[in-house]
Length: 484
Image (cartoon, rainbow, N blue to C red; front, side, top):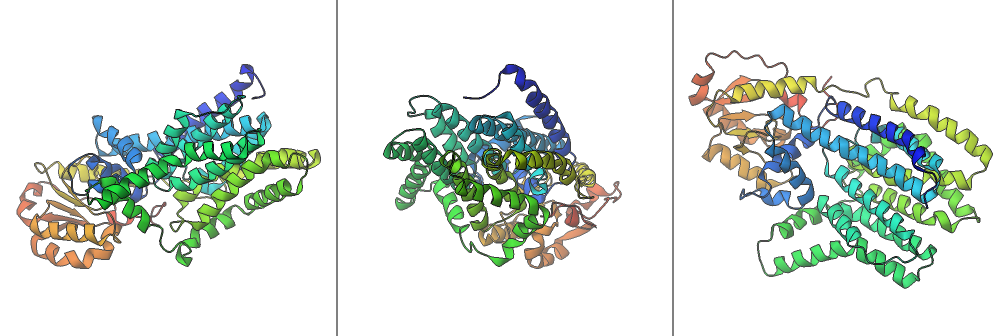
């Protein structure tokens, strides 16, 4: 049962309301990675007959949510800002869920604030909780599952819950990486229900049914479709998911883990102390075992996954933060009197410790508005835009990625067989740029650095002078920061 009454809620309400407003403001002014823009733009083919639409079906919840933004009458930059604002709101909601889960589980307000302070003081979380990534949506549904589960487990009889089933399904269909958090949730709920007095068999079976059954249903259904050679989009999308499980322990991908270690050594120390304290403390030892398993399982999967990007690591730290409040019970009061003021001081210091912790997207806005104005000189232009810089342009050639040779070859062939009006050369095109330079030199005119226009369409731009503020190649890359 949650400790406190309604009058105790004014502080968290005021804090999270203010934080949400700040998050939306921050998100709409922060530098955009091209992977965010690409997801926003790529979502327009979700549910269409486009040959590449299959690539959106392995994240149906994520892409369908982004697809709804196209219903609004917006220009290109406004469209991107609405998407960013939406995910900043979802990220803020996840922070609220982290607070409510900690408050419910530990039954003390101070424990909830310890989790929040710990989370916000980690730079890799603070700079990525609002990004337009399927990981942010996955963590939201996973945390909502945990909260609903904890509230239902407070009742005398825990039974079948359709809501939990739906939430696990939404988590997995946000991104296949949802299998990580759902396995961690399965272990947490199984141990927690056992400690609540449920028989081990019933606890584990109910937990399996609610958290993991949707995964097996989707996998079995898709496998049957593949066996019957039926062109099931989700089955084909699962092949992309399976392929991502190659080279788990790739040395090249551990740079972001090392960065986390450099930026947050004190946080890693707290995680270690909390884990050891739970295992060494006899009193109430079993009470905190579920959250220990939840957090360490997520740490294991973060280390295991081959794409250890910051926007994958950041949101998933919400699960790890739930472990830290256990120190309130496992450490002596003297230690806690030191820890809480330490976190109170550490949070604002680390949140703003880097001189370049904020990178403006103003130049990106100017470039996108410039390109939008340029495209308006043509009637129904066709754009070769590998990043999707102009999400509102309906006729776009692109490809999934340099490592996806099928889509890359398709894009190259399209450039020759159905020449687009405009070609935007961005960092994503670098791996195949040599294959298209001949076509560009023969049939296109370089209007700006990185912008090519068909020679037979140049007359439309005779009255317009070049004036791009910066090369698009350097301002739309995989980096989270602008070029120096």
